[in-house]
Amino acid sequence: MISKHRLVRAWSRTTPLVLATVLLAGPSAPAAAASEQKLLNASYDVSREFYKDLNASLIADWKAKNGTAIEIEQSHNGSSKQARAVIDGLEADVVTLNQVNDIGQLVKAGLVAPDWQKKFPYDASAYKSVTAFIVRKGNPKNIRDWQDLVRDDVKIALVNPKTGGNGRYTFLAAYGWALNEYGGDEAKAKEFVKKLYANVPVLDTGGRAATTTFAQRGIGDVLVTFEAEVYLVRQEFGADGYEVVVPSRTILADFPFAIIEPVVDKHGTRTLAEAYLRYIVSDEGQEIAAKNFYRPNSKAVAEKYAAQFAKVDLIDVQQLFGGWSKAQQTFFDDGGVFDQIYTLAK
Amino acid sequence: MTAARLLLTFVGLAWLALILLLPLLAIFAQALAKGWGAYIAAVTSSEALDAIRLTLLSALIAVPANLVFGLAAAWAITKFEFRGRTLLLALIDLPFSVSPVIGGLVFVLLYGAHGWLGPWLAAHDVQIIFAKPGIVLATIFVTLPFVVRELVPLMQVQTTAREEAAFSLGASGWQIFRHVTLPNVRWALLYGLILCTARAMGEFGAASVVAGSIRGRTVTLPLHVEIVFNEYDAVAAFACATLLTITALVTLVLKTVLDARERRTAHVELASGQLITAATPAGSRA
Image (cartoon, rainbow over all chains, first blue to last red):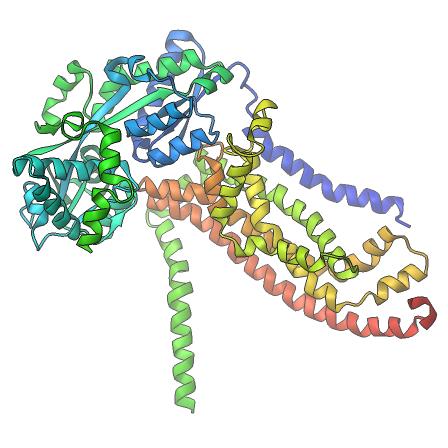
């Protein structure tokens, strides 16, 4: 028989455990959730620094104007991985990604309105950036433009276009430059990118991985990535260790955003979500973008920060490749141009 | 002979130093690279505390769940004969052999918005994937084999003689379990629970798939380490990594203590067990 005092002892032994569970769960339980509005922004990998600044600024602004507190949660991953997660049920109220294609996937899944680009200024684009080069101090290999990247003595760090939007921008920028250089000769342009990718010792999967390869592990003479990331590297790893080179012709990267319709309806956060996205394209938001080395969409802010951004000839994806989904098909789908030139290069 | 032995010892030690000792030192060196102030700030930042809280919470749910399931499964497998017994044993081992990433993806396939149970869950407003329940489920999945795997070999060696003796003296099933079976396996059970806890806190692969990495809400300690490392904050990443490392080291010490303890009790009890068996009348054993 189990005696009474034994039972009591067993209970007193489990009580601390129960208490601990309650205490652990306690502080994280959103007690104020009923009155406090909360927003989840699912964003791409390297936007953390920007949204840290922007969210803090909006929360203060909202409090001053409406007198209520709001909370903004962030989730960061590769742009395509985030689109996938939202399709699989990640309840993000808004997405802020780095590829129009990824929002296209969400439109197909019925989560984003087909006319999403018409709902906000600047075609629902947060800001822009261009693909640029970063080289080691003093530019020892004298890298000035795309043609220098195919020299035998140059090793390049960049992102795999199959896995990262950043890498797709790099590929199209190089290819577009070559097309222009060789008077539209596609065979010569393919030959050029083939030689370029033969100079890449490691194809990294994402923007941050390529940066680490170049800056932390010291692999390669040049890193090709977003201009914004290039400036960030200088801040993190020391401005005097690296130099930025903007090539004569490059590509404009777009950072589109959208509201996830069923989620804001479910959470009742449509007003807040719209205010949030409008804040990104307001002059305050655009100024924060410029401070994070993104090229602002707002003309006024762009003029104010003009000295920060080199003037550059831009490749028009629509005109040159017939738009993003066409470019994706031609170049990056299995068996596309990238697969052809990359297997040949190896 | 002695030269060869010396060389072997040296190679062995050098190998250990390279694979285990140096990385261990590197973690602590990196964590303290900017001094104690930066270390304390890193492990007490609100995001780190949220991650620690979530990691402890999922371990606090996963470990008791595995305690109950592990005991029940081991008891059934070793003390009873039934069809599908070996199949059950093989199934329990599945989380060991399958990559945790696959485990996570399968949960997305089942409980995600377009998963088999997704529409039903959505209709009842239950969020599993990209929320805490998903992380707890993933943790339970990867830690499933630990308790069972510790108990089964020991309980197989211990024959059912003592349970039969208790039964013949009129004990109920629960009493046999509580007073005979459980005390005999207590050290192995504790050992399994410790391994289970360590694994639960360190889980990365499956959690990374089902978490959705919402800061302060679904980020566990290992996920937090990766996030801050990607933000170029190596000191904070390694500071949080030391917490996991310390957990692992404590596990190691407890494991060693328990090992010794288990061997001693097993020895004593085996001797007394034989006495009991000998004293049991042959007629009551059927």
